[in-house]
Amino acid sequence: MIKKCRKFILLSFLIYFLLSCATNTAEYREIDNAVDVEKYRAAADEITVRQGSKRPLYPEKNAIMLFLDKGLLEYYAGDYKKSSQSLQEAERLIEEAYTKSITANFMSYILNDNTKEYPGEDFENIYINIFNALNYYKRGDLDGALVEIRKLSETNGKLDMLARKYEYKDPSSGASLEELVRREAADAELPKGRKVEFNNCALARYLAVLFYLADGNDDGARIEYEQLQRAFLTNRAVYRNPIPRIAAQLNNVPKGKAMLNIIAFSGLSPVKEEEIIMYPIPMFQFPILTTANFKLPKMVRRPSKIDRIEVVVNSNKKFNLELLEDMSAVVEETFANRYTNIVIKTYIRTIMKYVAVGIAAAEAERKEQNGLLILAGVIAAKTAFEATERADIRMSRYFPGKAYVGGIILDPGTYNVTVNFYSGNNVISKEEHSNYLVREKGLNLIDDVSLK
Image 1 (cartoon, rainbow, N blue to C red):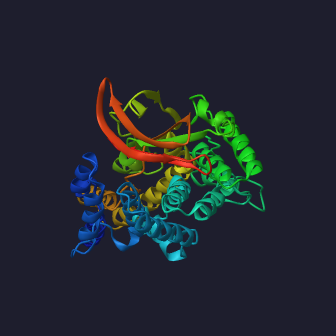
Image 2 (cartoon, one colour):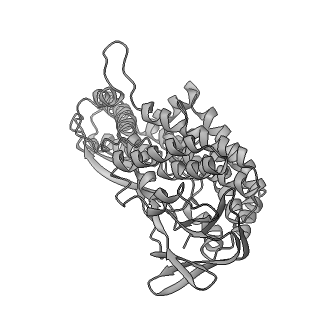
């Protein structure tokens, strides 16, 4: 028994060592520091440098994270062409990840989800197209921006698919996916995610209204505005704020006047951290095996210093932006869709490991009488098993936490526009747009960001 345990412990810690080579949050420190002082180009360049080192920051199985983080930082830095390329590559990899190999799924049950390629979160798959739409707009390509938005908004688009993603029914029993995974856990009272129905995105709908109006498609803009209203009505867990007043004015600009639109992003979206939950498993005869440590991912919000965003036009016209979308809430809601399945999968994997230890211990007990040696072997085996278990906390790190919008009707002409990001009474970040041309025809859109 002891010899077998020693071999198993060595193998398990070798596996643990390989898994521990995965990126940990401390390795992002230099990039995070650059982001905190709004040096987005330096942050993107640091990723490129780190990827060229002997130990890349993003291993090959985390390629989606690489292209998401790089693409977002390039967007903030104003490198819209490179950002489009990075985000499009992330989107391509997410599409490929929908069909995972049998081997990868099998290994994730034996070890943990970190053994698989990172497939991306639902919110990432949505926001990719939003930021890529802005990339195209900033490059003067309205048609490209509309293509990106239509990927989300059209029938059978991503928002439509998200609404149906968790509606799977077993052909033989008619059971839902949630019911099936609960049966797998033998009716265990495990932590469960709450039922959510996020299937609409106000930020996507708002941009769609702007782009359709700029394209002269008033009917398309009207439909998207109705969808914007529906998003607020049907997703109250996310949209607790009122619809911004500017939304109703977008298609009501007096003749001879022009609308200046502002979108501003603030803060950083949540990240995953590992949470350890002690859970009883009374089925085993060895007391040491009757309590397990479940290592689960949980979303943790990152606080933002910004509590108000003010726009100043020519020093004499001022207005505050209004919250359109709490992007952090979208992150939490879409993750909650998957949480129950993550818990069940962790439970099954843990039971499989504990059963293996229990069988080996029972066999050793049948062959020899030294209870202390058997107990030592069980403890060692359990310790080794738990060393191979880690929560999958991979995700993109640089999506914003909130999206604000606002606008003002002006005479066509040239204006100096300043966007001030406030923390209390102090301006902690500002963006200045000198001699910005506001046109009567087309879209006048300024977008700014401060991730503080």
